Length: 281
Image (tube, rainbow, N blue to C red; front, side, top):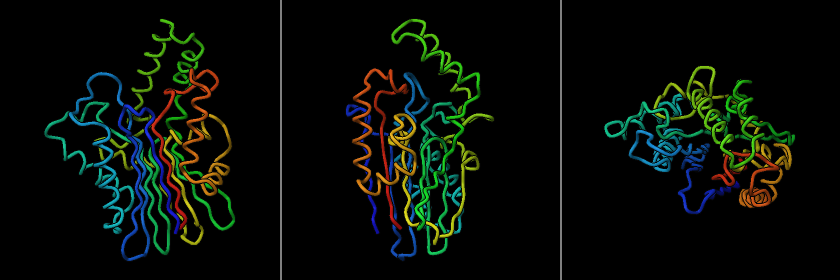
C-alpha cells in the first residue's frame, strides 16, 4: 500500500491551517482519510480565543478517530459528531455563534473490503480512479458557483487598478456579499460549530473493487488545475501518481512566484496553505 502526504504553509511566518491524516486500523480491513482546510479569518474579532490550527487539529483528530472506531456511523454522522465534540471543547469560553468562528472545509473518505465511502464539504477536492484509469473528481461546487450578482462584484474588483481606493471599496462590498452566503441557505457550507452542516456535504459510495487509488487536495494544492490551468483532474492525478504530492506543491509554488502580482492568474492570496494526500488502496 502506498501512502504519501505533503503540506506546507502559504506564508512561513504563519501557522499552516491545513490538516491531513490517513488511518489504517490494526484489523487490516480498511482505513480512512481526513483532509481539512482551515478558513483564514479576516482581521478583527472572530469570537473565539482559539486559532484556526487549534480548531483543525481538534476536528481532524475527532474525524480520524470516529471514522475508524465507529463504522456503524455514516460519514455525515461522523462529521456531525466531530463538529459537536469540537464545539463542546470551547463553547464555555468562545462565541460559537459568530459567523467567523473557526471553521474548515472537509474531505473525509473511508474504505473496507466492500466499499469506499466519501464526503466533501466546500472547496477541497477528492479524486478517485479504478482499474480502467478514469479519474472521478468529487467536488462541492457551491463556493465556486456563487450567484451571478456576487460574481459580478468579483469581476468588478478584478477590473479595477490594484491598490486603488476604488478597488478597496469594491473589494469590501464583494467580501461582504460572500460572507452573507457562508453557512446560509442558497450559499455554501463549512464545518464550524453547527453539526447540521454535515447534512449539506456531497456524499457517495463506490464498490471497493472499482477504486484502486484516491487523492485529496486542499484548494491551495488544487490551484494547479483550478487557477493555473496546468491540466485537468486526470492529469493532476497522473502527476501525483508519478511524482508524488510534494512535487505538485512545488510546482504550484513555482507558478505562484511567476505571477507575484496575481495579474495573469487572479486569486485571493498570492500563496495559500497547500496539502495533498495520495493513497493506493
